[in-house]
Image (cartoon, rainbow, N blue to C red; front, side, top):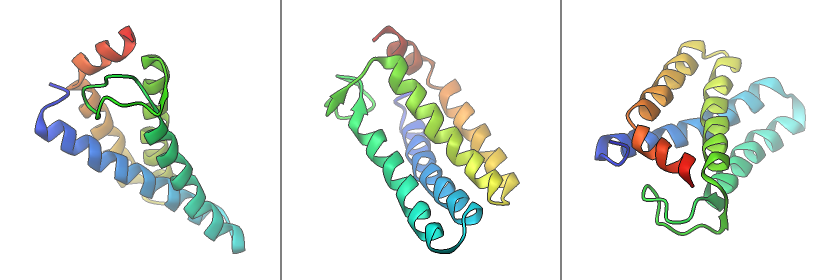
Length: 122
């Protein structure tokens, strides 16, 4: 079920929301010039990590991996970024958005048990 169109769409939207949540947290928790730097830098770093570290032949991606990593490492990276984005919304004063996002992340992974098993076998 992890590769159904609706779950892949949800996952993509959650990835984008995570980047937004990370940026919003940095914006609201910092001040002055650093506010601009951190609000841009952390989402950018998260996006680069997301796109760079992957499992070879991941069916939910192109199959390519610029930097191949074990499945457990990739799963940890995904969870840190996605739940980090949800936490970012929460810390930025948008608690309900953060909670809904965290629930949607959990729902997406609940319907991706086949992908989770595949990741943990790699």
